[in-house]
Length: 244
Length: 51
Image (cartoon, rainbow over all chains, first blue to last red; front, side):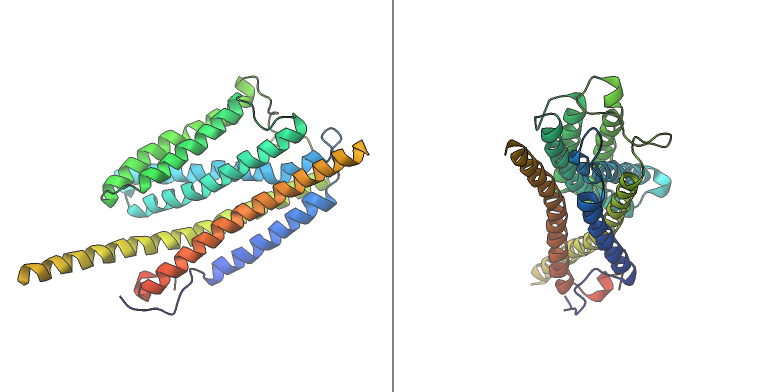
């Protein structure tokens, strides 16, 4: 294989998004820790809002993209391994974001409820989501032809995503420690600098997700190319053995 | 004294949460870019459509 001097997965677009994401994260830290005022009810604990809620939102978005890409792979008209690759990349980032959501939720819970964990509907269904998508990633690692693996993973990805609406509505359907959504299209329970801080954090997390997806997708392209090269080399070796 | 202890506990918890989140994202990014760099050194440029 040829040696290459180009060792990065960056482009001008990804660099601009990366810089904007870093500025957004820095802004989130300054706003979240220093500028945002304490909440009337929660006091300084509200500073977790700027971490936990955007992470949870991006978790659902990441797994939503996995589910949509999986459907597009299974649908014959749009079947392409590109959709399978996008589904896998988004699921991997989603697993990291779910772990972050659970960790920040536990730390916030310790301050607000006095306990890190309760086996209530929302927390348990979120933990289940994490376990299911770790299983999804394990399935992607199993030896199989790309088409067989893509079909299996698409089915599992769609089934695992069904937990997301369950998580979202669990605060309304069951009695849980977790409060109902603080922000939505029709109402918000906070405004002013807190609302601004929240939107800064949300934009920062969206930019981080886009940047990670761009690089993870390019890494997945190279992983696929390495597999293809390995297969070609194995076939060439077999040919050489047969001729000898 | 007790109030100071409670405030200190809350500050450590909240700042620790921010460090945990940013640290997790940084670790994931570092590992991903490290693997990308390793694979990029072994592949020809025709396998890198973003170039």
